Image (cartoon, rainbow, N blue to C red; front, top):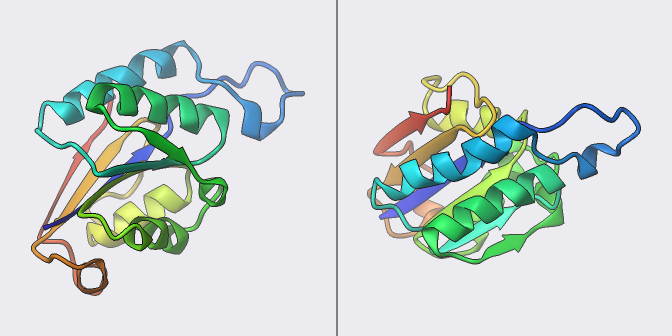
Length: 156
């Protein structure tokens, strides 16, 4: 079985207009949402083989919360910052492990979630978690067919 979990970074701070987008931290809501959503995912029994995150501060902080709760190290991938849906899926499948969690940004996250859910997930709000499962053992086969199941969870 192949599993892919998409996590959009938690809510970020917009208070400093001079701060580079890549360096925006989580705000208070985001700081609370990330570990809470990680706990909710953990309660489903899911534990990924790999966690990959964008290098942006808000994404890597979100990923760190998920990594801590799930007991999995986080690898930072510069190409996930502003990545397209195609790049997000390619990063997951290139790992060749059965289950991957990706933390990144919109619009790529929402586009990929919408594609994989056949329109069932129209938008990934901050810190949303979309899970997809295929009854396949190879990523090449899984990514060529629709997922057998999917789920969506959001902090709001």
